Length: 284
Image 1: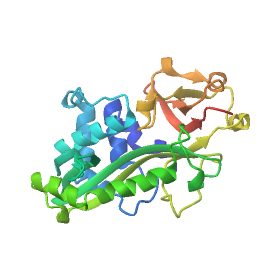
Image 2: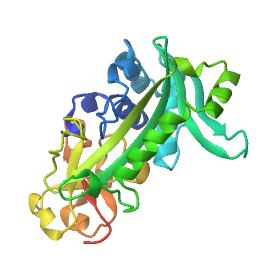
Image 3: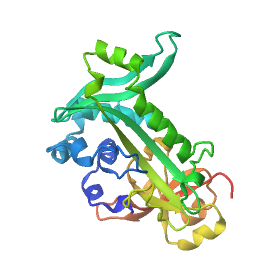
Image 4: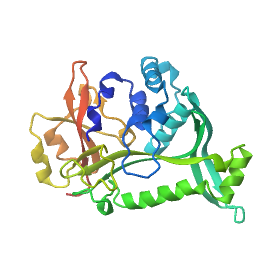
């Protein structure tokens, strides 16, 4: 699926709101078995609130930005949970320590109440590629960052709130661990040679997918008139919407390594919008 073609992206123009909207509405990158639904995240008035933020950007705090994508995504989601009409944020990045050693075991990303239901929620945003998309071969631009390792880590993070140490910490925040439903929000994009995914045992049918360009033959899908945009790491969340001065040519893209890139097209408002997302590894 090419999530960049969703009609939502023709309406939202504020870059921060676009990033927030992607966290709330994008399909999961893989099946966790406990993914929080878009309906639950947005609530009854979520789209209306996103439009309000887009048209009134002064409502957004100035301290949301962070250079590291994970921190930025957490800041955005924490803002949403604090302000969305159906939500109450009870804890964010709640540290859990071993009672004996005093060493930190981990942290709960979010404890949040949505429509009167309590959740322990773990967030992850990942961008993985391999020629065929087989889960055991999927990795990020940092090849040590693999899908299977992140899957295992996410499971451990979700289980943490059931530990005795976590229960003690939660009790101090007047939260009963027995009432928590453990859920995930898994965002990102999967890249393959074909630009699509076939393994529906792990990937949802609507997973956002793009094209892996790990050899020179990969550029045969494009021609000299195509235009592109190179993402900074903190810009991965939402489909690109950029002005003309940031656009580069196919010849320039061919010199780039270790980056995510969008093929873009000009729309009537004078901005260039993402049509397709590409992953260019470090060596090919």
